[in-house]
Length: 164
Image (cartoon, rainbow, N blue to C red; front, side, top):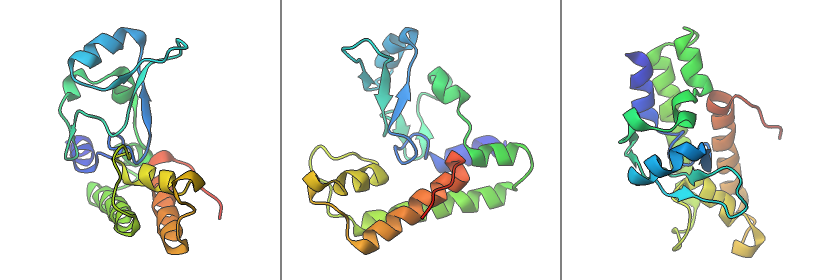
């Protein structure tokens, strides 16, 4: 029960703030298209996938959970693993999720309004804004808040640590 509670309160693995794409097996392309996912078919024949923010995400919940692709079924963030192994309580894990969403909202508050064609995911949008061709680099305060958000996600969800 607590594992699904955590996932339903989180949604970060689907909203584009942890990952920008999800790989698909070739056999999953047609079923995922039928479910309404925006599948990327690469002309060079490399592995298909779909972009994040997942079109099946409503709020923080997956609307195709029972039929989700293999990559989604197999994914376990570091926080979910820690909860499953009893290293963190459900209450503690939910606090970490709430902190992650607060970090992301803090970044969003510092970004200019989204332009047409901008990614829905706040941290992807910040990365795009940071590019010289989009007016970057980000102002120092925005960069600092963005780095704090990325560090939090790395530490608690992705399982890696950044320097600097």
